[in-house]
Image (tube, rainbow, N blue to C red):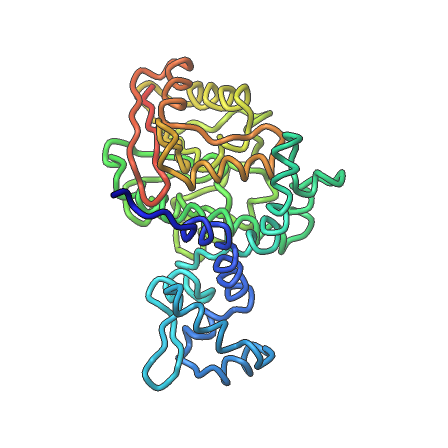
Length: 337
């Protein structure tokens, strides 16, 4: 007899935004940062976070059931190991910036996904005539929040790249579109012989330099200002593009690969990392959903497979390419000039 069909999986997927928004609200409220100080009972959480008592216990126990919190025998709540490490704003390992942005921006915009699928147009600030980058960069805090979000979504991949790429064969590297400098800091921390830095718009410089100084690498990592659309890329043995190419249409993707090729020396390496879609387009749901997010956020951006990227790199002139899994949904494509 065949397996009995039930609607359970459909219902769980269709209502999965319940759990997502519960986590996002917990981050917004600073719950994990507060519990990192010490475990608290529900009443104490209610007071510390200025919450109404009606649903606090349901809220906390839902997070226990979602494995984001743990509840002790005495009724006190504490962070789960992962949330304690990655969602405590006081720790340098904090990776919640991207989730803060998801809560503040992406969550409402994704409510218009159907419109995006019908029109092919972005559903963010651009829908009402605004400029999303101007909205993000409107003030110092908006910029810092966005760059922190980029660090959060890239941190796991950056840590893996620092470990998996053969850095011992190279001396210099530059992260193109570096944001705060999360990847340069991870690489510099792991490989003392390397020097390098990050390339981004001039407005990013103070945020990058502050982040690098905080980690103690100002003597080895410098900031290179420019636009990768209008300026040549800086030269180094290794160039990195992380979560960059998916923002742009195919012509722009290929243009950026050409500029990287031109900036590299012979035998230099380009690392492109994204939530690469699997070549058969069946398994990496996160990569495919990220591509839908590019519909929400950009005029022409889309995510792609490792085979796609290797093909474009071959057209550009790179003599050798390979795909290597990093962590979670992220993989890197390495190209050698």
